[in-house]
Amino acid sequence: MIFRKRFISVMLLLFVVVLPIVLFAAENPEPTIAGNAEAIKTTKLAIDTVWVLLAGVLVMFMQAGFAMVEAGFNQAKNAGNILMKNLVDFCVGSIAFWIVGFGLMFGAGNGFVGLSGFFLKATSDATFASLSWSPVGLQLKYFFQLVFCATAATIVSGAMAGRTKYSSYIIYSLVISAVIYPVIGHWIWGGGWLGNLGMLDFAGSTVVHSTGAWLGLTGAIVLGPRIGKYTNGKSNAIPGHNILLAGLGVFILWFGWFGFNPGSTMEAIPSISHIAVTTNIAAAAGALSAMFTAWKLFGKADVSMSLNGVLAGLVAITAPCAFVGIGSALLIGLVAGVLVVFAVIFIDRVLKIDDPVGAVAVHGVCGTWGTLSIGLFATEGGLFFGGGAKLLGIQALGVVSVFAWCMVTGFALFYAIKAFNGLRVSREEELRGLDIEEHGMESYDGFQIFTLQ
Image (cartoon, rainbow, N blue to C red):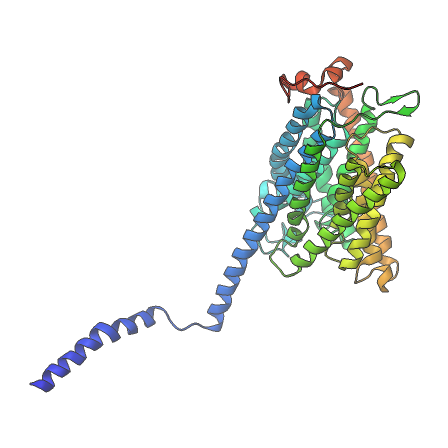
């Protein structure tokens, strides 16, 4: 009797405890090497996706930084107009880049331009082969590249601030986002002829920054200077209305640049830490060298030059950030800070081209320097590291080619707009301010600004 009770107890125990374990094990087999590999791959893709999305959002937030810098360095009567420009170029660019720009830039085609992939439609695995190195999905690739496109368009607005018709700004933002910028991007990043030659531009010193600057240069030349800027052969300062806004904008841009440069890996890999450090070192060095250069020239530690020094260092390191050591990044930033001060002076006083925010000096001159610096400081192939002059020559060819493309297309674009729509507001509209004339409002309604004599 006792034996039977124990037997029944044991059987119940097996039924209640052991059987579920067996069944669970049958449904959840032991891990295998293949299963583990697939799980790791899925986890890595999720991490890559989050990282690239976060980096893209940081770059998108740089639109706010550009808006603050440009508004702060310009007159109060145009602050709202500048904000609207930064808003509309991202809106127009988002749609134009989706429809045609992304395909022209990364779609399969020839060495000059992509000819497929419009509306993000991939007809085969080869359609976007130029981006196959990144593991993230196609839509995220589009989003990340879009925010770079918007940056290039925004740079143009700074050089043309204070006297450009708003409708004309919308037109040229559309053309730049849809055609001019994507062609350059294809040459270097999309499987085009410069990339095939071996040109390096990791995050866009030339693709993004110099492109925006050279197009801004053509626009500023076609527009002419602001009223009162040059009289009797002399350059007259037109001070920005809010240096605090400009300073805030620079800090926002510096912050966003940690998405701009490290995010250009387009996957979460250990090298993002090195890229972040080279980016930061160059920015700090650029600020200090610009400050001390201006201090020596003007007798004061000029605030606007120091702020532009930060941006100069950031622009210069954008191309080489993944290819150079930390010490080289320091030197690249130091040179950029000196260059930007002398470039601002030369463009303003010698060339007499009115660039209210120094966009051409910061993004064009320092973008060129950063691109060439790869040929000097790259740890693999750089002239100073035993690589000879070949890489430097390729970099120089890329710089000249992009400059020529921007000059030709930029002048054609702005003269066409001038002829068919008008590029510049009237004298009366410029004097009253674009906030009132273009948007029917004031950025600082109810405030009166007095100048102490």
